[in-house]
Image (cartoon, rainbow, N blue to C red; front, side, top):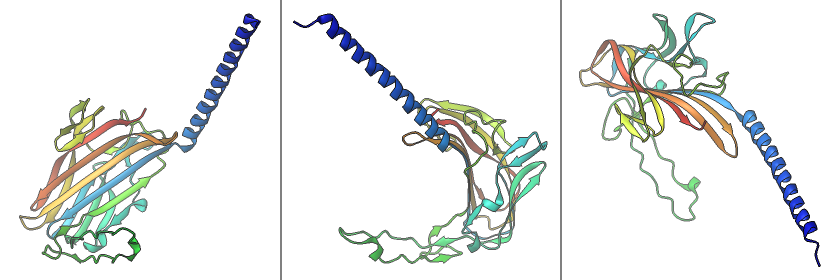
Length: 283
């Protein structure tokens, strides 16, 4: 006959050993993932500017807000935009455009200047179907045609673009409360604080559910001549992102977007509405 107290003792011992093993395994995994997260952690700034003109514009000076912050060490407003790291796409097709950071009343702004900026149009590329078993490399390459005016052959207006990717912000970005701590388009006016448990559209901008932010206004200082029907479109976006790897990439971020279409000639300061979204992602 079995000795029941001994069997119970063995079961209890086995359970205790299993608990110890699970605790140790959990501690090892937590340490591993913490190490992985810290080793892979990055704080990233991403900047993008797009602009296009439907017709030529002349004697051009575009002063556009850039993400900036107050640096107490220097006592000045500074921007995180480093022009030596900015790529400029399609600008060579539109004329000789100068792009540089300029201080305007103590605020850094992007100065785009040119005697003349021509529009960029291209032909519409029709997609080519790939048949089963067909190698994509065997397909004919599409022919791209560019023009400085609209036509039936070149009906697609192309934007000129500036991009900057900085994978070392130098600190963990405050993505919940960037006001006063992180770069924002300056100078700005806060029009309204916004939030929504579900996705909602504010002033043509989409705010995803569970996030918050603010409607803002920033000044564009523009000077150029053109026909009354011309449309100059400018959109700018800046993101601050913390990202890390724990069984897959995870991140949190804040993002600011401004966009506007200017019709006809421009000479003066134009306040443009934008949306700042904070607290997106995983915390």
